[in-house]
Length: 349
Ligand code: ADP
Image (cartoon, rainbow, N blue to C red; front, top):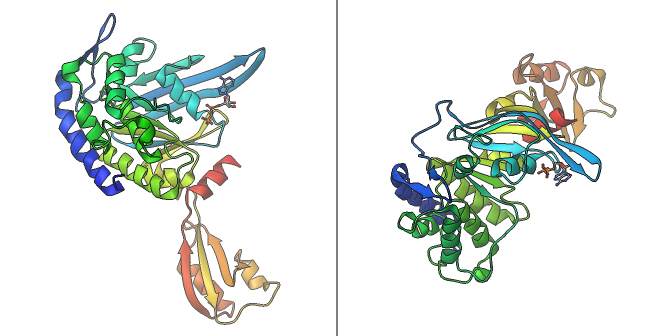
């Protein structure tokens, strides 16, 4: 299997190689001609995807379930956008509405400037969707798989970029192997390749690393970053906070069918509004802690004094002085910034 770094390089050079041809390309579908969108021809709004008041109610044998409750989402062109939320939050429903496999109940969605109701075919051509399940036919080679997919999208033979795309995902050497002989990581990359046969400017990945081991996860993250660096707007769903923190520059937290917050990652992290100071003391304090320390909100954990404070109201230096004034000698200091997990827990509790 190709190492993460080399496959990232493949992706970078590969995308660069296929992008310039985009402007001229068109796809013939049964009754209409669909323009393959141009990466450099951004929507006027600067938004790759917009959803307004999006609702979905599932109705199963008289039981109704509101999976999306008036969702508003703006995905800026060129970002890695994370839809973060626990299982059942409504992430897949949103993706499936964009893919055209689930019909929304109300609201609107626009993909690369095309409303999904006004022009469903064009809006589907503007996006590539990588599903969660490894839905690959074991008896086709990667090359055959991509050719078949391109055929389904109506990409004319002369305009197919099968070799470039295989190179893009680091599968050139495996192009003619039966897919059943591909490793798990290669199969995932073949899924990305399948979603790219019509060279969409937006790639949507539904739980791209669900159930994969740590080493493979890191390689897939490298691939996603490299695709984004090459100009592809990426939307991914995840319930791994760590994944959203490592990859995304914009994050929407979805819970129970509602967007709880949608901000840049930096804004989201700073909105947690607290820092923690961990202090090693020359002499451990008595138990229970003296009032002078509990008044500062201090707790004694794992042999350290931990004090959480709001940086808008105090500073690490102030906190440290207070501890010294209370008569304690500080030997070592470390600070902890909030991470996405803190923000997530705060927002979803
Ligand atoms: P997520 O992708 O965030 O895990 P989903 O979009 O799959 O969430 O599901 C959102 C909610 O809608 C869940 O409660 C789920 O059980 C429900 N749901 C999803 N698909 C269907 C369906 N076809 N019929 C009925 N309920 C569904």
